[in-house]
Image (cartoon, rainbow, N blue to C red):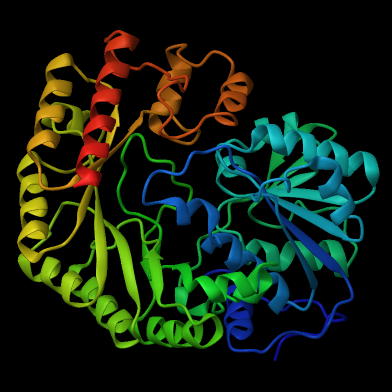
Length: 468
């Protein structure tokens, strides 16, 4: 049973005090109505969609869907404001849309800093007494700076679900103002920004509720399009220096749970295509192949990301047989010294073997590359360009960005490559992936013109290969 709103949460469990309640919510139709409205805001993005990845920017975000589903399951009235469509980013319009909400949560991403400043300021000016909180990867990486630089009152850090259960209960049901005892928060206080004790990650992903896509205002369009983003896991065990990751430990859903989730989503969204959002889909190849079988059983076609490690002929053939429309390999560089400096944990031989296995299986492969990694030389760039020119795959390239929360960001601060953090965040709010004229943070010993020249040449190859 889900506790009614007039009872205090009982969350006594060794791993985390609220995971038992999360499990109960997962199997329930919904909690008793609490009579409070929680608004969740998805910021706009200036990004130019990478060819073939438009859906990832414009579609229903999986993480946002999970948080909104939980709020609805807890019995709160839910208001979702998606500011990504053209015209929806207007701040005055957003304030009006959110006027009736009792609390407002705003997602934060690497390109949303300017929007966060403007929206939180306008929301607090309109209703100073109403609590506004942030969540998502950017504030999880830079909680002090984000709270000091915006009008938000507090932030939910890292994986949000367990913290939100306690946080919303404390604020909206119990009317508490002292939130220092809730794990996983950053709080704006008179003495400055304070972090509460860290929140452990969810131990068992089977305890998560199935995602409810009816939370989206354009639910009917989602059903019509037949495209959603799902995952069989969360987190990543790797430690790449450039990776923007705020949920570290890798956990997987049981295959039985994943099968039930796919069946539920087929029934509720009629989807027949998904982008698998697993960061390291093939970390456990036998498990990944079983996931492929489940998708195939339900008539779902898919794209996936994969590491080049352990890509066997059997794995590639399984993807092809089960409806994989393409596999995207995180290659980054074709120079072993650069890969080693980036802590990528891969070799040139593994890159060659993975691409060869995909080609033999008849899979469409894309290789993801970064221009400007530390250790880059003109020789390494020439080698990358030649490898791409000869390869049986389509390349996608981006400039290196030392995102907050990464090892490279810490290096850029230490060396003065980023001297003004707020200014850097404002630049990211205008940055457009794939734009030749984007500002770059040069962490190499090469001239910027040389870096840009190779970036342009790789994009020329991308256009040539896509036209074939």
